Amino acid sequence: MCGILLCVTSEVADDKNIQQQVNNGDRDALKRRGPDASSEIEIYFPTAWKAIFSGYTLWLQGNAPDVQPLIDSSGNILLWNGDVFYNQIGGEFIPKGLSDSAFLLQKLKDVETVEEICNILEVINGPWSMVYYKKNLNQIITGRDRFGRHSLLWNCPARDGEILSSLLITSSSSLESAHNSTLFEIPASHLFQISFGNTIQVKKIHSRKPYAVNNKPISEHTFFDWVTHSLENKSSDHIISEYLNICQKEVEGLKVILLASIKSRIECQPMLCKTCVPLHLSGENVQCTHSKVAILFSGGLDSSVLAALTDRVWPKNESIDLLNVAFPLRNKKNPSSNEFDVPDRLTGLQALEELRRLNPSRKWNFCEINVQLDELLEMRKSKIAALIHPASTVLDDSIGCAQWFAARGQGILTGCPNREKYVSPARIVLMGAGADEQMAGYARHRQRFANGGWPSLITEVEMEMNRISERNLGRDNRILADHGRAPRLPYLDEMVVEYLARLPIWTKVDLRLPIGLGDKIILRALAYQLGLPRTAVEPKRAIQFGSKIAKTEARKEKGSHVCDRLTKSLELGQ
Image (tube, helix red, strand yellow):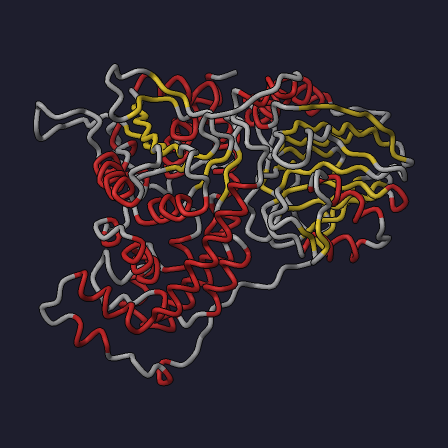
């Protein structure tokens, strides 16, 4: 995870607005993303353009942090904000001790054409956003992975053939850039080629293929009537057991591929926490015994399965931090109850009990992150609103604020006798993004199924995945990475996505079954099989409702409306 920035202006008439924001807050926002190494270079393109390349590195791969921007012997420049998982690109393994960014720079140097550059990028397994200047072409290639898991913003509306007088590309926004300029998320539907002549010209290249689900006809489903018999006075446990009798192979396949996804994501780090990395880089001999992995943990299905599987592949002597956020209940039904006993806190503690039964010897650090209204207002104004930008809805505000406090990891450990404060030192944070989109976890999936049956459900799932890069992943990346942690999304691993897409829809979901059973039934069955029977039947609850942030400020508003709190925060933060 890194912070990257490119600013291009004319040698003759510098864009003072862009120069000002680069010189002020943007660098601070990027340094929070990449605190371990930084550098900046200024070069002049042959066609009278001045370019500033800035890079801020969060060290996760290689024997030491790579200082960005990276420059090869031919003068090509790479700004890389990504993670190459499974230690290879296109079947070619990364040599031990070498970082993914240095390896990618070498591979890009060895090719000549824009098409060859795109072909290398498209076989990377892992999230990324990048800027690559190919000197002999005097062109820049930029873009994000096909799911848009890492943020990248620019001052271009992204119309094909767009002509600009200046260019700004950055992986995060500050108060200055959010307030003073119009930034857009770089679409993940294409990669982009930027040419420099009398003007700056932006061209779409390399269109991504749309996501498609196995649409095997229902008539070929030989065990399709199982639900009718299962609903006759049967318990949830019995229904899941019957499903497992039919779809055991599919559930086992999901477990195997998710384990590989999680393993690659938590092992891809130098096994040092946030506290110990600076000591190591200063030359000290450090034996780090602190937490290195955290999970955004509501106690819901998605995060609990991640926790149970992480337990299977993470060393037994290593602790795992479970980050659980809550906002105060406004109207408590029981006056003697804790004001932070929100739904996600209660399900989190319930899931913690199940995890402790699965592995009593594991040190599970359940971090109660309790956020009062005054702190929410202050941090939204000073930081969060800018990170959410250019997203701007009420839903963006609720989710973005909840995730920012959760990822900060500052709270109290459950069971700690003295209620001492705890700040998670983990540099890797797992989150469950992508499970609902692929396995029909949202209420709208059930509505589509009710109105149009299986064909409508397939269409909705395909639409969800084809637009996932446009909705929230860039926002989530800016929010979580602001704490110098790397957010990693095992459900959106390319091989997990490919596996689920190959399965017929009814092996993953059956919305003839009630809420808390039919939605994501393949994942519920996996949770049940792993030893999480209560969590397996928990209904979907979005973070804004489970944490109660949606009710904290007592507003009646729709999630799709523009959020005036974000707009005012950006104005007040100036």
